[in-house]
Amino acid sequence: MRWAALVLCVVVVVACKKKDKEPEPAAMPTTPSTGHSSTKIADQPEPEPGSAHAGGSAVAHAPAAAGEEAERPTHGGNGQPAYRDEGGHVKGPGGPLFMGHSDECTDKIDHCLREGVWFAVGNVQRGHIYRATPVFQFEDKWWSWRGDPETDWQTLYRTKVAESSSDVRAGSPVIWLIEENSSSKWLVSEFDALTTSRWEAGIVESVGGSTIKVDGWDHPISLDTVRVIVQQKKAG
Image 1 (spheres, rainbow, N blue to C red):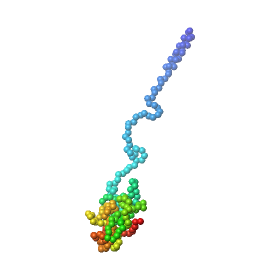
Image 2 (cartoon, rainbow, N blue to C red):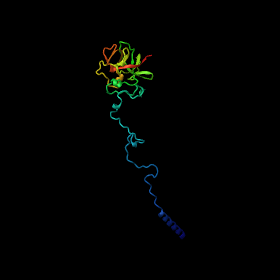
Image 3 (tube, rainbow, N blue to C red):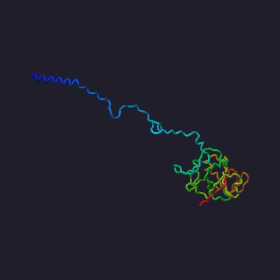
Image 4 (cartoon, one colour):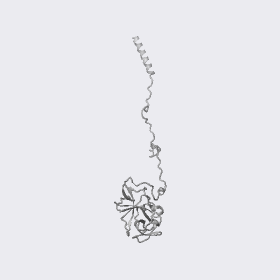
């Protein structure tokens, strides 16, 4: 019995010592040590489109310069061939027409016409006056400068400004800008010059200095409004 009691005491003492030396468990972290951080960041404003913070390269779009419209050529166009725009509308050679107010469309600036302009006219005969419509060719058809197909013609005339009375011959057809019922001798818009109904055609009766007489027209015609024929085409 004495030996048994002694052994029991030794076991108890050893167990107590082991329990005293057992370290306290480490405190568990309040946030996970791996994975995505749960740290909250204050909301930031969304970057403006096109800014350097929106991703990619920032592209600055400068506003159109003031007076850009006024810097466009007021007549003659830019040399561009006839084309169809994104909407399928036919546009004449030289690009968009200048529709603003310009210098007077005198003979000194080719009456504000463009390269590629022809005049569509009826079957011109002596003693009769015919409306002459400025037209251009595109896709094997003829079009007005409003973008409408022009089919009602018998003759097409390509013209140039009459530089002197020697350019005009009696008995020959001419095109001229009429002044009748007009508040001004000259047009002041390229658009008007290419769409006006003031262009007429007729046969020259006589030439006299700074004016000519057209058979069937009652008034003398100022030479600086006259265009003479350099080429013609017949329908059919």
